[in-house]
Each structure stands twice: as structure tokens, then as C-alpha cells.
Amino acid sequence: EVQLVESGGGLVQAGGSLRLSCVAFGFTFDDYAIGWFRQAPGKEREGVSCISRPDGSTYYADSVKGRFTISSDNAKNTVYLQMNSLKPEDTAVYYCAADSTGWATLRPSRYDYWGQGTQVTVSS
Image 1 (tube, rainbow, N blue to C red):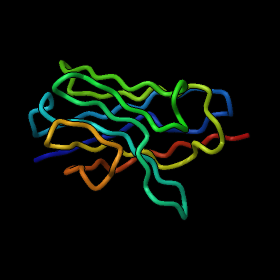
Image 2: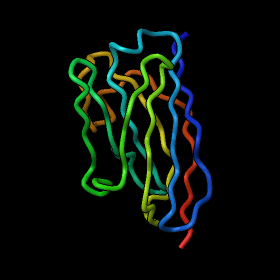
Image 3: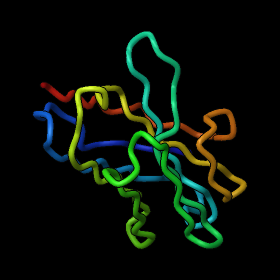
Image 4: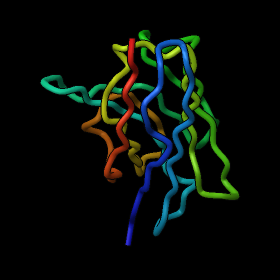
């Protein structure tokens, strides 16, 4: 059974940091692109960052460039999202997703599997 499990969310003050983890089960982890997305109340789901498999290329939304870093530990079937200098507008439910093409994109519609999400709340 394919499964993605996120963890690491929580409540943090503005300027603080969190590291999200996404652990994958049930598929060949190295073959799938992994993306991080977020959805705030009343807003559409948006791409935050993603990593391609063939070459390890990474991509970031403009709103998080320079503050967030995506990385992968293939031995642990885990992708991380290190979030620094957090802002109240980063508050959302964060999801990881897997794309079987292996080529990453920030478009949610491309992804085949999704985790259940983890809440990130940044207080001002």
C-alpha cells in the first residue's frame, strides 16, 4: 500500500524554524518526484517546493526562496522541508506528494499520491 506520512508541524513564533518530514511507504522511493504543498483556510493548495529524481533538481515557490530548503535521504525513504525565518503567512496545512514521472513540478494536479498533512502555525 502506497503511503506518505508527514510530521514535524507545530506552533512557532515568527522568525522561528521547523523541519517537516515526509516518509514514504509502498513504492520505489527513488523513482518518484516529491513535492511539498500547503493549503491555508479559504485558499487553494499551492506548491512550496519539490525535488526531481533523475537529477535531484529542486524548485521553490518565490514566496519561500531563501527561507525553505528541501532535501532527501533515500536510505530512509524520507524527504525533509527545512523552514527558516517563518512568517505568519506561512501558516497552513502542509502536504507532501509523490509524482510517478520522477520530474518535479509545483503543480498539485501532477501528483499521484498524497499524505494526510501536518499543521504549521506561525504566530506574530
